[in-house]
Length: 178
Ligand code: IMP
Ligand code: MG
Image (cartoon, rainbow, N blue to C red; front, side, top):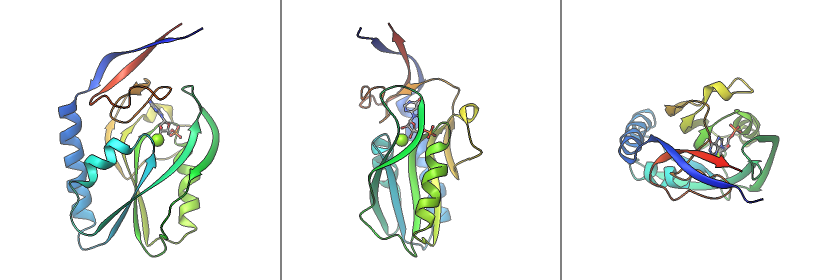
């Protein structure tokens, strides 16, 4: 049976996202003034966010990516973190800022952060465009948060449902009908 998916309510417009990303970058520029920064995007959901965020960043910035997976094709975390693509840069002694699309259960970051800390970066912080605090299975909050959103499965601005809707310039709530 094929499921019909469509985007219903628009949760965040293109304009709202745009001004929030600029605001986040302003904070990051202030906090990292005079420091070299390695931005690590967590693929694939981060790709639009990272490309918008880094274009507002000053100073010496490198952009790298990792791919991990904690989701299959559904909407629930499997609880297992799999590294699909590791970093191609040594982060020892570097200031690292992880860019995530969304923090949901928190499982991805609580597993990923200690692994990266073992590589002895000078510092490591997380900037998440979105956070769903009511969905946490572990105690964790990112250092920078764009928007706190309710417990709804959302798509657009890089986020997908079964690989669809990443291209939308806004963030909307996905509706699945059998
Ligand atoms: P966590 O490990 O449960 O915090 O989940 C993190 C990852 O799950 C995110 O980086 C997303 O890729 C994915 N995810 C969580 N909630 C949503 C959503 O509402 N829409 C699309 N992807 C989501
Ligand atoms: Mg993600």
